[in-house]
Image (cartoon, rainbow, N blue to C red; front, side):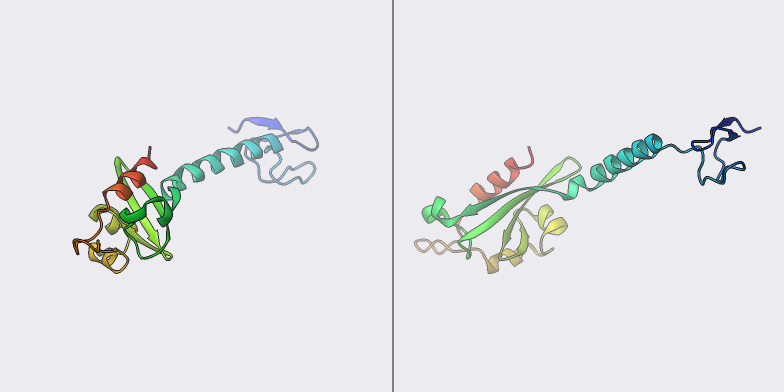
Length: 145
C-alpha cells in the first residue's frame, strides 16, 4: 500500500510518487522545489567527479625561462598532468598537439606513438642529441600533486 503525502499545490493527500495529483492536476505533486534542487546539486557533484580526471592541471611555459635547456620547436608550450587511477601522466602540448612525456602518458593522452614527439623535440647543437626532457617531465608531474 502506498504511503500518502501532501500535494505541494493543493495540500491534499496523494500517493507518494504519484505522477499527477487527482485533486488539482499538479504534475509530480510530491516533488518539491527543495527536493529538485538537492537532486540537481547531487547530480552536478557526481558529473563533476566523473569528469575531473579529464580536467588536468596545466601550466604554460616559455623558451625565455629555460635558455639553452629548451627542448621544443615552439617558443611557448603547455605542460599538463593527467591522473589515471594511481598513475600520473605528464604531457606537453606543442602547437595544439598533445605529446606524452612518458610512453604511458602518450598512449592515453598523446599521439599513441612515443616517437611522434621527435617532430617537435629539439636537438642540442653541441652534442647532436635530443635536449633532455627530464626538467619538463618533472614540472608536468608536479602539476598532478
